[in-house]
Amino acid sequence: MKNKVVVISGASSGIGKACAWHFAKNGSKVVLAARSYDKLKVIGEAMMSAGYEVFTVQADVSIEEDCQRLISETISKFKGIDVLINNAGISMRATLEDMDLSVMKKVMDINFYGTVFCTKYALTHILKSKGSVVGVSSIAGYKGLPARTAYSASKFAMQGFLESLRIENLKKDLHVLIACPGFTASNIRNTALSKDGEVQKESPRDESKMMTAEKVAEYIYKAVVNRQNSIVLTINGKLTVLLNKLLPSLVDRLVYNHLKKEPNSPF
Image (cartoon, rainbow, N blue to C red; front, side, top):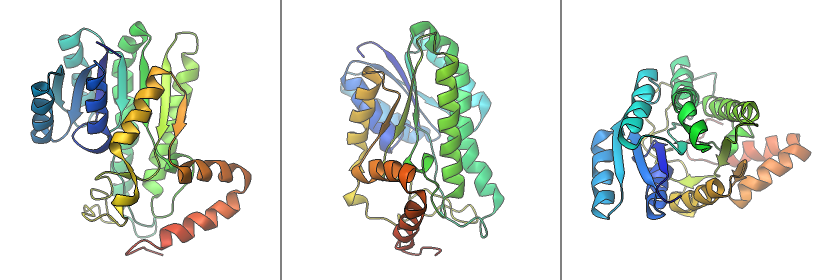
């Protein structure tokens, strides 16, 4: 990946930030994008101080014009794009019965349409470089999770979109990776939306027992280098995907009972 141009959305924290550092350490030119410019600036300065080539762009991926500007500024700076990592995402926790529909729209706008917008504007450039489009999805893109209807819907949609994109460009050497971490230590649960669209603030899970964002970044990097179609991470994640193919009704009950144990669960 030396001297490859890698664009990462949601790069101000978690998996996006970890990917930025990992790709940069392996010689890539990294473009950091996120809504919070203050956080981006701190990360960008730290990476530049370490001797890495970094470019930061403030962008809200739910806004089409921001995605278009992200790509155009990247092209102006580096003259091309080799890898796009669609990582920006938001979660939620509420039953559909209780949830305001604005939550569904916001989650879909960021998780799904953010991926569509960034990919659409970057695609011509990535096809020229025969590069990679990456979607950071979730086990929730394979198995619908209770009280995460919007989140699961957005990840199912993302995966369908990326799979279709891969097949459309089968003869053009486009690499498309769908990366599905299991529960990962990050702030996605802290920033998850409640039934009214308010930020949840506290994670309902023990973050210390989860795979680190840095480890996820390592797997994503290797999958990009090896041009893999998909990766599913963590033992629980792999088991969920496998068992869901064989015994979906059993997995329904297991998932329900597992998430029912969360603090302040709606069940």
